[in-house]
Picture 1 (cartoon, rainbow, N blue to C red):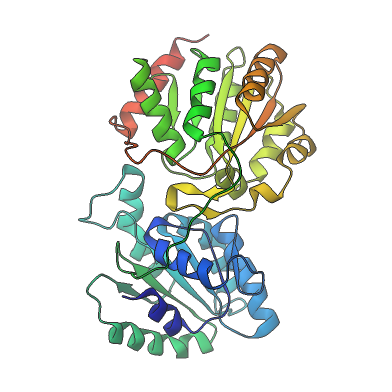
Picture 2 (picture 1 turned 90 degrees about the horizontal axis):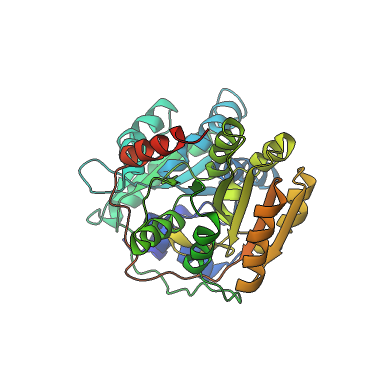
Length: 374
């Protein structure tokens, strides 16, 4: 259905969310109308953050906000729904718009398969009525569903629209870009060269896809890499667990700005434990690029100062290849916990592929390699 008509049916004037490729039409529409405007539209760090932010909006205005997300974010929503929004607690109304990745019977990536299968079940468990919108759903049916939700919202309940692939159409064209010069794939190429045979933990999205293809192009084994194809925001914690368990082995974490922001508390835990063998690299393009390029707040904050405040003894920001190579070499020689923020352009190859190994094959190869390390 036409995304403008969908937004009109929702009848809200405040939106907050975490971007999703299934919802790119909605995200582009909101960016076209509002941009990032604290009064009307905020892209938040994670879905729980969105729910709490929207709750504050409702408390201040009495109006019903909209939270949009990929279905993988339902897990981050469960706590605020159950302990803040629910009618047995504060009864705060909210509309959720959820992109349905991994819908049963629709081909998708492995990290979405189980999440897709339980998407509607989780809404049932949280007592949230929902309406599924597909490509062929008549707009009149969507309007009828919204009309039916109004009584529930008035009583402090929540409701959801679950969006199938391609269901929202006619979005405005939005170009997402920044002034940075280095491309992520080239940055990862430099990291691979510096890391040698050290293990690398890479974040979800295009970073892991590019790392996989670089190994293929170099004729290198994939055993050195753990590709965190899902679980956004947790790659650095996986790397921490690995670094603490293999203290004699240097570990590299290739992170993204959206992922780092999603669970920023992980940096505090890393800094407090201060593993001397961990190099944490945040490739910062200020965008949720894998799902369309919508902005994060990462280029408006000082990640180096954040890292140092969290206890990282060394942190640096670089924006060109010479500085990057120097920072990578210094991190290797320094032998202490280091954060390297790399300012990055938005963009990737149109023909970028996906890993040809299964997630379990990746795990087995990686664990087999780690078993060889003292």
